[in-house]
Length: 360
Image (cartoon, rainbow, N blue to C red; front, side, top):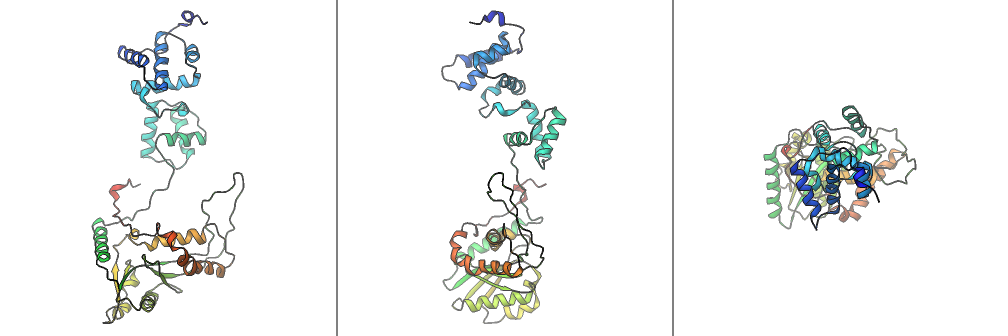
């Protein structure tokens, strides 16, 4: 049995009367979280003059834990006893230091954990490993991610007007009418590394491709059937646009109206298209998306799916092999597996506002 009176030395914690009463009440409660009770009991004992080593023995906690509790209590006061997410892995920064650190990195985002380590060492004299710095940042409410790329000049009113126009069109769409979204894509014959799950410890590489050739594809996608109409060309211009629109009419002879949503590329406004579009027997009708609003064109998401399936982590030794793979996706994979893509390639439109984001 320890001689407790012999262990009572100078007090390492000095509570105010209010704090002492509050902690004593916590210790007397019948129903209280075990961790909260342990914390309260530890500070009551320290305030009474028990040394830290004996307190650790009584409560069966490590000396490092007690040190961290003291740092946290110094910064948060009585509120520390209600911190359910506090962990003994919190490190050696006080609550106040972590608050300042969080404010700093909120205003000046860290590009990597090395910057976090350097800042903590310079400001607080604490040395963190890269993994420890990553845990610290997650605990402070940060996540490592890329910022979303937003159009610099997005017009909210024009976006809302386009969405309203599209919804009205779809509501009144006749059985012999169809809606497609059109755009161009230019996949380049390059190996594109992408994240995947690989065996731990295995050095994984992707063969690089030295070519710079690219395909030029202009397509139109029907979100109802995932019918994809496309043409190829040495470059995308008014001629390829006309070819694709003519192909749309040929491939859909029973449709009396084909609504085509396009962006504001110059070739969509070319004079060469006007006589054809204004013809009395014309079934194609162009609808122009607002400037700087690629998020309102679902076919942009189809290009992303294509890259996921065909170019990411794939090496094509020749441009012909690359071309066959790209065209094979549109001619075979898309018609066969389009149901798998419906949750990704959708018309779930929304207005993008810079007010929703903190821009950097």
